[in-house]
Length: 322
Ligand SMILES: NC(=O)c1ccc[n+]([C@@H]2O[C@H](COP(=O)([O-])OP(=O)(O)OC[C@H]3O[C@@H](n4cnc5c(N)ncnc54)[C@H](OP(=O)(O)O)[C@@H]3O)[C@@H](O)[C@H]2O)c1
Image (cartoon, rainbow, N blue to C red; front, top):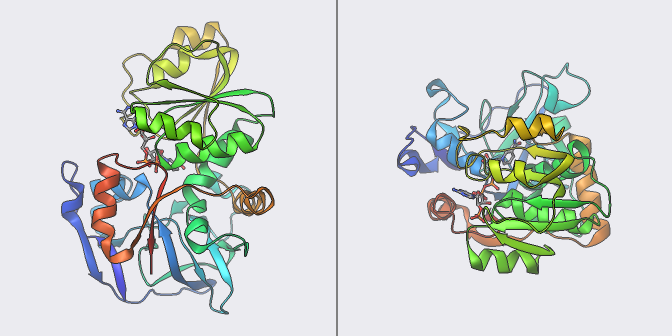
């Protein structure tokens, strides 16, 4: 079948290991099923995979992609939950120590078909297009859990979103606004700051700028480049939720003194549960809020799409279609 996959790793030139070609049809273990992919969205995770972060050489060749929307074997319109936990695991799938994401241990979604455990198939609301639905399972689910589950944020509270242009960041801004929060956002880029206002931010600032007031919570996916600013931007007792480190995990100043003296809370967040994915889909269905799609390309143009993400030339999600 047609597939986009990693054949080798390179930290310096991640796209050098990318192949747009053919792979065997998926093997379907007992309890698993296949989904015919109509749309899949890119995540920074796909670049980490091409760099060799999170999977071993023996796993190659590995089809890229965590997210998909398409048809199940009965022809129903579905979403794929990307977190694969042990079949015997019960409760929050993200807390299973043995869990993996599609494209880490099991083949990913940038293909004609993807095999997933039956329980990972979630109904797609008819009101969402395949392209919109394909944005939900990783970036939008991560944003939903950061804000409303790990952050426990309530209407009227204030939140700062760092690095406004990314897939997770645009989801954070849109969902926070829909959830009744006061939303501040930073970006390195003036045009991205302007667009952040359009999608729901109340106020935007240059990366690292001093804010006029301290916020209840900060949503962090950037890491080294923004961490100190995030810690400095919180009110006493405020909460920093971290789910990524695009600019690197090595911190110049972790802000420990501020963290203990101001009694800040630092909470990690990863993906979300199947139930949270279903709740997110219902929230979009009910509110009319939609993922911001930067561009849609045919899946055989995956190289161009990944190059744009590597260069940071995006605002929102890039979607690949079949
Ligand atoms: N834990 C999880 O479950 C989970 C799930 C999804 C994503 N993530 C992680 O979250 C991060 C974002 O993912 P994504 O898919 O949204 O990526 P993306 O679409 O490529 O976005 C990258 C973001 O990083 C910002 N950025 C990059 N370099 C920066 C720098 N030097 N200084 C300031 N900002 C910088 C960009 O902001 P501006 O260009 O606007 O400044 C942009 O918001 C990745 O590290 C990813 O691995 C984690």
